[in-house]
Image (cartoon, rainbow, N blue to C red; front, side, top):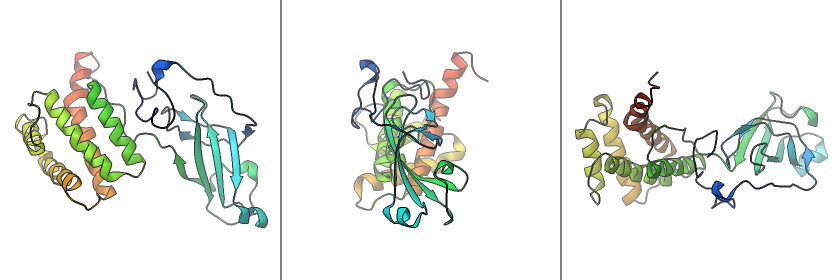
Length: 241
């Protein structure tokens, strides 16, 4: 189990070249690894927050000629799982720069790959709900909003069935089920309609889903799962505060 996320099988590990945690940890040994300026980031493989100071560095050819470092690419080695992440760091000014100070306030991270799931750990989730939730978060974090919404649609169906709805029903019937059973709070009923409409568009129309819409749907699903699963779980476990 991952200590940071609480996820037993972190979605995406196998598809990205890793293996199930059940197989035991791998002791990675990186050849000719360099010391690089440490910078905090979240490892997309294991979900841990780290500030790796070892890896590899590459600088744009043009900036090397001008002795001005604008875009610097790093391969950073996670201190927890020892897997590599690609990080692009960018200068926000054009003055001369000391390589040893790249991680200061004058530089920012332009991108990290792989990115971790956008989903935050939620207590009390059934295994199937947890897996789909984390997968949808991976899609959203990696710029696949349409796929994220389609998984949120599937997630809502699983939530409904876990609370007593019959299987093999239409999507709209699962939304109606959650509304009628008051699993969706009254003041956010309009959000349920938005989930219904955007979910239908993602599944049946050619138009791709806007990222902002996908983020809103994902945030709504997080709220719903806390309401349906986490708070009852915390009360039962004596951690209601």
